Image (cartoon, rainbow, N blue to C red):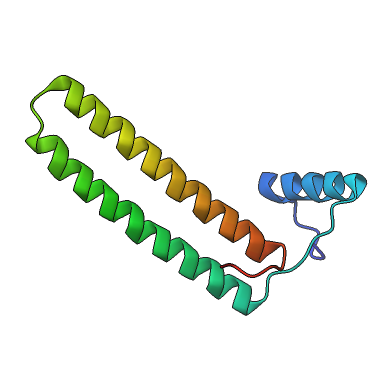
Length: 102
């Protein structure tokens, strides 16, 4: 900050994290516009997939009256959601590392 204004807590935290990364030898890479677009596309795709499984889960859960069936549906939904979230995060990390997203 060249104007001498005090730094925000966010700015101070980011400086500490950058310093910690530098000490650990972690290289930073600025995201290009193409990287940002790829990340946005990945997030959008997985947001739609998660919404789709949520709608299917809600419909199936509304039709299930047996608690054990409902519990199995809930477990399946959580597992699917976790799998999709993990895939999304893995693909985003590949883009951030400079690898292809798919």
